[in-house]
Length: 178
Length: 354
Image 1: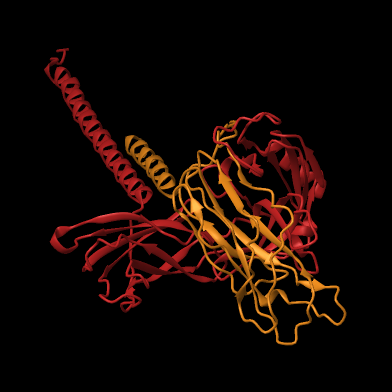
Image 2 (image 1 turned 180 degrees about the vertical axis):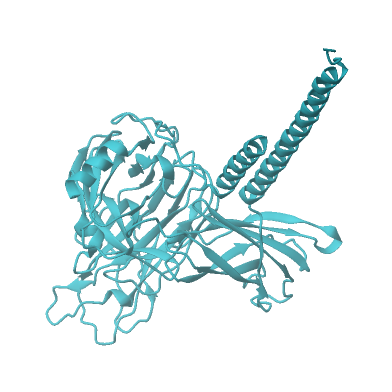
């Protein structure tokens, strides 16, 4: 009788021990939690009236004379383990109403962020050699902890075939911050 | 079935509120432009820093999930913000927003309760994104984002459109969430074109979900017993399923060439791995040393705790058994003594002479 009790206790404890050892990380209970992670990532409104200047036909990856307006990002998110963000950029083809003009493909347009000014120098800018109409490529990336901000004044580069018709070409550049 | 699922999720799910009263503007640091913030994350994902910034979930087909999002106008003038969901791809170590012709699954599955919002100066507004996964959706992870798009620049020349968004990493499949995992294959010591030492780690996503990598590198056992670091890793972008990428860790130009024991800890969300390798930086700029195999360092505190507790329980179990055995033996010994003393008085009782 006593022996049975001993064995029963032993079995119970052994089961408890093995269950605990195999138990997954504790699941959250149904209690409400409030996490005070505040703050946003924000991007500034684009500058109005961007006129890039003139380029001659036949150039390869030439900088447009004038830069696009300055882009600024601020990140005030708190309570996170890291404050990483990425700005990606894409472009439409640039088209002109001049007669006989064919659009400049997005792949002929490059994007150079230039020097990225940031509070903690953890934001880096990488040129994108060929933009795309459908897929945005990463250009300015910030990896680190803590609130931060960064700004840059990008330039576009153009590769124009020798037969590019003269005219005013326009298009749209989209910056996406996420 | 779908209704039941919606009801189940609405009433059974408990949300962690990353709260600020809607409409209140309470930022300390001056910000400009339009900002966005995810307002809620499921309770069991709260420890995951990625889930606090992005919409990350794993659901069965036919499920509906909701997230509240806040859009803030930080400027001193009013603005109108366009709101919509679009797709994305994970390629070349990057999370790339993509608008393909078919609209993409995330764009089709996501509805926002408003498509634009007028924001007076320094005010915020809330929107709710509802993602309805079709019952015949195939298993796998989808990517996308919910965008708040600022008004385009005015003018007839080049137009610039800026937008800010919350990424979506949605995994669909019956049953439990696919586990995340990654391997660090090699560490390569190199010098940049300007001579800055940099360590390049080759990382492979071997799990079932995309990873947003971060990490740091420490150097120990260097020349003259020097240590250096930790230096933050620079990857910061995304590895899709089965994809490989390089993590770059730039170091201080002052450090000697080595040899060093490099310890690299990389993580994504709550998943963390540590590897080690012995590296020596080349002397010339713009040159890489041969890659060194990275050895995994098992540093799981949780594993140690589980083993420790299990051993403790086994010890207690043994002690308990021992104690009961001792009691048992003592009781038997006492019983035997009682039997003997009961027997002796009978022997002494003289038989009546009759």
